[in-house]
Each structure stands twice: as structure tokens, then as C-alpha cells.
Image 1 (cartoon, rainbow, N blue to C red):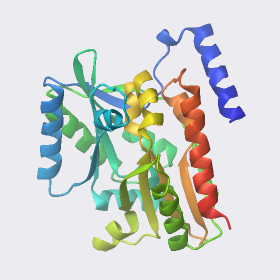
Image 2 (image 1 turned 45 degrees about the vertical axis):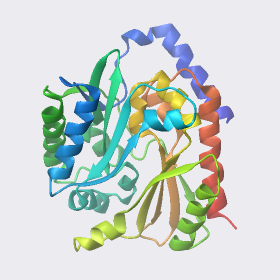
Image 3 (image 1 turned 135 degrees about the vertical axis):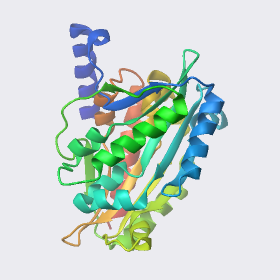
Image 4 (image 1 turned 60 degrees about the horizontal axis):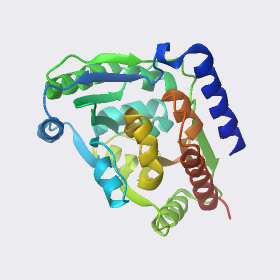
Length: 297
């Protein structure tokens, strides 16, 4: 907790000293403005994803609706989680931990009476997982730009980027149990917590197996608490791309089972967050406790 708070203070003070309004964004996102209303833009994206036989739409999370259920207000934001199992598997074969950022995500959101579309750049994946040997990144980049451009009616532009080290911002807890037991303990802990909701479970191993590609056991759990996530999204709409939070349960080449997740301090840096300390502390505490309790006797 203290480390996140100290990091927050450091980022905040630097922002005051150097003028955050003039800093280049560090979100590593691609962005475009839509010529259509929010509802029509979301509908167009949904239709394009479903009509593409190479893509699977795993989930659509309506952040504003989830906020409303929690008695909170949030401007319109829909997160689409989708992917091509073959292309995703090829990336995870280069670095299994990339499953934390896969499947792909596109966010449609409304801000200041404008509808916008954003997603993480392919270069973000390349840097965070050192995917230098992945041969499909160029095709992936073109496909994402094509989808976003068709949906919005406009060109896609780079929002900002910063230098990433391999696996930067990822915390991994080593489990004392086998893969299946670890996964079941983690799911059970989330399901029995009345404040948490599982939005999607994605079995990367099963998806790879169905297209006859090899992969070690790897599963993603997407879950969250709107009471914690909503205030954070109120500060920076684009962070809705990384919410709800995620756990990746995976077994590495040495047979070690791990639970991996994004460090909230990394989100603070990436999206230049300067508010909602209690929510960020609660998020960090929940991730630490859930992963530790699921991984240890």
C-alpha cells in the first residue's frame, strides 16, 4: 500500500513541476473520433466483429450500465473483448505471459459530446512481451486499424507511447498447487466475494487446442467491482480499456504454476492518474489478497 501511495505522490509532484498538460501521453494507445453517435458506433463495431469469421467476440462490458447497478454515474463506455485464436496463440507461443493482454480489446466511449474509439497499440504488446520474433504483428496492426477506421469513419492516430521493459507492471504469484486447483481456488474466492463479479473466463489453452496449436495451460479471468473501478474511469475515460481487472493463471515451461496481474501502480503511470487513492489502494489490496490466498496453503 505505502509503495503505491509514495509512487502516486511522486507522479503527482512531477506533474505539478513539469506541467502535465504539456506532457506527451504515456498510454500507448491508438485513437480515432467517430462520425456516429455512441450507440451507433458500438453497434457498428459489434456487427463488424460478429461478421468476421476469423474473430471471436468473447465479451462486451457496458461500464456505464455496471456503474448504474452500483448506484453510480458514468458516461457511456463499452468495452469489446475479441480476438483471433490463431493469431493470439502465435503471440503466446512467443511469450505465454502475453495472455494477460489477450484477447484484444477496443473501447468505445463518449467524452465531451464526442464518441471515440481506442485500443492498445501493437507496439505496446511488442515492447511489453519482447515479441520481436512474432511475424504476425504487422497484420494485427493493419487489422485493428482497419476495424477502428471502418467503425468510426476516420483515420486512426497514435495517442502516445513510452519505453516499456519486458513484463513491466506485471506481478506474478507462484502457486503451491497444480494448475487446475489454483484456478478453481481463485474462481471460488472471486465468486464468494459479494463485492466482485466475474465478467468473462477465457481458456487460451482450449482455444489453441481447437485450432490444433500447442500451448501450456493458460486461462484468463476478467472480474471487477464497479464501486472501485467507476471513480477511476471518471478521472480518465481511457483507463476503461484496462478495466475490469484480470488474473492470468498459467503453467510455465518449468511446470511452475503462477497467477499474474497488472500492478495498479503501472496503471497510475500509464494513464497519469492523480486521484482516487482509496480506490487504487483497495484494488491493489484485493489483487494481492486474492492471488496469495489462492496460491498458498
